[in-house]
Image (cartoon, rainbow, N blue to C red; front, side, top):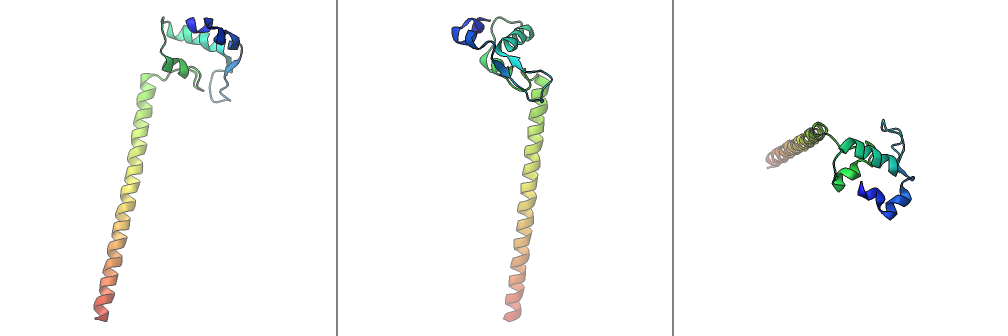
Amino acid sequence: MALRKHPHVRKILTAIARDPEGHSRLPKETFQQVFDRMEKDMQVKTIEWPTVIEYFTKLGRPLSKDEIKRLQDEDKRMKEEVEEVRRRTEEAERRRMARLMEEINADNNEEG
């Protein structure tokens, strides 16, 4: 990987690059270890920058298509649930306002 030959990168190869703090199956890693794992996993000549960045996350690798789909589905479900709660709240408020208007009208009719 050409990146590891860059003078600025060579200076940090032994620095800690990932510290998942117990939220990953991967231990702490140096930049050198992350680059080694990335090369082993990817086995391609060129790696896009967004993919490189994912190797430095707590997960330590890019998400699979199935994982991305699952997270998208979960986001959609959560959004639908929030929308349903909002709709129910608006409907309850509409009914409450209608009852109040009926009470006001009934009070006005009794007075008149």
